[in-house]
Amino acid sequence: MLEIKNIDRAINMTCYGRPIYHISTHKNKLGEESYVFEFDAIEDGQVPTGYNKPQQIHLVRNEYNGTYRLFTMGLQMATEKKVVLSEIKCMTSLLVEISEILRTTKHWWKHSKTN
Image (cartoon, rainbow, N blue to C red):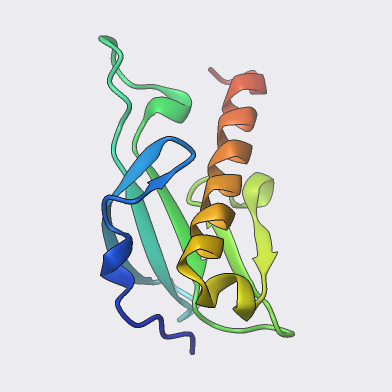
């Protein structure tokens, strides 16, 4: 089980232009635990929709074949990326990986026919 010491130090750090405002843990129905990096809504004078809504990035703490899964909640199939321990151990590398997931999320919402 992945354990990141001092994970709360990432609060207020920025990923893809959005600050992390909260970090929690979550356990899904399959018993998988994950760290949840929460990003507040982007306020632009309108009701936040699509990418501008609050976002949650999950880092699944259960290792599988030497990798961990990182994805946007609600868009797992479109945003999931496998990361190795060395990309998680370094806070800077982890923030870069989270930024990449947010970039993919923004791209998905921009090109989605649902918005």
